[in-house]
Amino acid sequence: MGGSGTLHAMGARIAIVAYSDYVCPWCYIGLERIERLVRKFPVDVEWRPFELHPETPPGGADLSGRLGSSARAAAYANNIVVLAGESGLAMRMPPVVANSHLALEAAEFARERGGFDAYHRALFRAYFEQARDIGDAEVLCDLARETGVDDQHLRDALAERRYSALVDRMTEEARADEVLSTPDVRLLGRLSPRRGAGLRGVCERHAPAVGPPAGGDLTEPSARSIAAIPLPAFARMARVVVHDGLPSGGAPNARPEQL
Image (tube, rainbow, N blue to C red; front, side, top):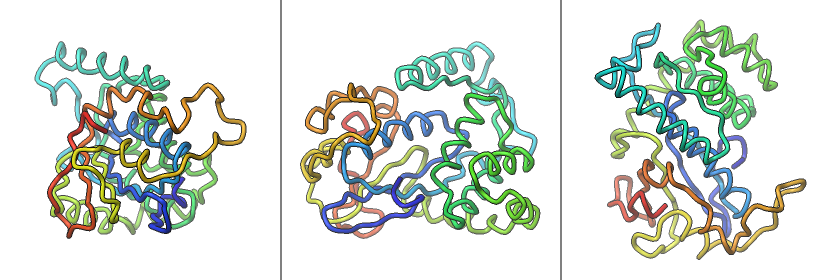
């Protein structure tokens, strides 16, 4: 998807930059939603790392401690699970918030080796569906092996923290560009969208319809009815900024509920 995580702003294609973190449940839901758009429109996506909770200790942190009480944590988790189910995801909220820095580093290794897309999805699935600790280097290497990424060289890269500075730099650059949370999805290029049009509106206006993928679900809505795809969680949680050829840090043009 999008050339193994790289962006290609060519021709009539729509270029999207999406900031995400592997401990963010809304990012997993957002991944599934964006993949629907990618299947229907000529959209290229560049996924960029954004460490959402750098304060999390290496061993992780209790979710209820983050949300104030066990009852509040349970309500939060239940709400997310229901919304994820509407997206076809069998999500289970982990009781411990992992430190995601190593996972973000591993994803950059996978990007460099051409295996980003599969590894990116596998990290979310491992954490939110399989209760695996993505803060553990051995788990990250297991996932690499499962997705065809070189696990032996990944182990060395993680031990040497070869991609640590890169993840820190990209997170800091994102913060400087007013990325405050995840998921944060931005459209790039001079598409001249209507103010407040949102991601789907821009896709419909500027991208020609494409057929369903080979072997795809023929019950999926067509490109012409893409607006009918329910996007409840992503629409509520994603912060969408349309950069219509503006310098970095341009004013936001789209409200989240219009995605």
